[in-house]
Length: 418
Image (cartoon, rainbow, N blue to C red; front, top):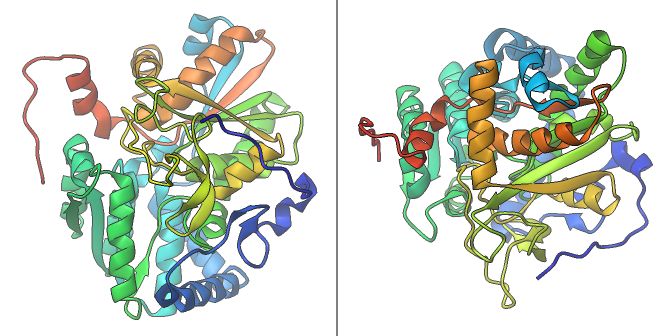
C-alpha cells in the first residue's frame, strides 16, 4: 500500500509548542497505553517539565555531556570524499566521536539524571543495534543504577561486541526470542517489565517514539546536535548548509539534527529510511513506502502493517533501522512538506560504508551509512558551490564483523555472547 499524507491545519510556526498538552504532533503521537502505565507516564512528564526549568539539572547535564560524553562534537569537511564524488561539498557532524560511539549517550544521560531526581534506582532499556544499550549501561555504571537491557536474539548475533560491552558495564542483557527477534520484540519485553516494576524502575526509551512524553523528551535531549551544527557551520562556511541528511529508524538522531533548522526554510531536510533488499513487503523498513497510519507501542504514526492491522516483518542490513514505525514528529513534518524522506538499499548502504572508510578513514555505523548513501547521490546532482551536512550518528566498530560476513571475508573469528 502506498502512503498518503494526512492533512491538518497546524503550521511550522507551532514548532516550539509541539507536541500539544496530550502529546500530539497534529494527528500523530499521543499516549495509547494500558491503564497501569498512565500514571507513570504522567509522573514522568511532570518530573521532566520541572527538571528542564531547574538550573541545577541543566547545569549537571551540560557538565556530563562535556566531561563524560565528549561534547561538543566536531563538524568535519570530508574534502577527499567530496572531490571523489565531484559535486557538493560534504560535511559530517561527528556524533560518532562521542563516548560509547553514537548520539545515543545524549538521551541516556538526560534520562538517567531524570531517574535520579525521581528516586528510581533500577533502569531498563531496549536496544537494536546496541548503541542505546551500551549508552544506557554506561550511564547506569556512572550513577550506580541496576540495569537490564532487552535485545532481540537476532540483533544480539549481529551486534555481539556491543552485548559484551554492555555486560562489561554491569548490565544484564536479556535476549528476546519472540517474533522477528529484533527491536519491536525488545520494546514489547521492556514495556512488560516496566508495567510490573513501575515504582522502582525507569524505562530509558532510546528513540523519539512511543507514548508521550518520550518523543518530546528524547528530541529535547538530542536538540544539542542541531544547535551545535548550526553554530559550527556558520563559523566554518559563513552560511547554513543547503541540505541536511540523516538516517531514520525511530528517528532520534534525525529529529535532534533537524530541529534547530525547522524554521530555516532555505535548508532542505532529508531523512533516509532502510530500503532493505527491495521495497516488497517484508523486505525493507521504509515506513513511507508501504506503511499506513496506526498505533504501535503507545504511539499513533506511520507503521508497516498488513490490511488486518498485523505488523509486517521488516528487514535492514542495519540492526538499528528495522523498526516497523517511525517517530510521530517525523510523520508530522513530512505532512507539512518540511522534512523529505528517501530510502537507501542494503547494497547502497554497504557501498557507502566502504566508501567513507576508504576515502576518509572514518568507519560509519551501518545505520549512518544509509544517510551517507543518499548524501553521495545528492552531492553528485549538485554543483560544487552547494553544501550537504550529514549526521554521522554512530561509528561502525560494532558493524565491522557483520559487514565482513556480508562481504564474504573468510577466516573470521567467531564471536557470540548470547
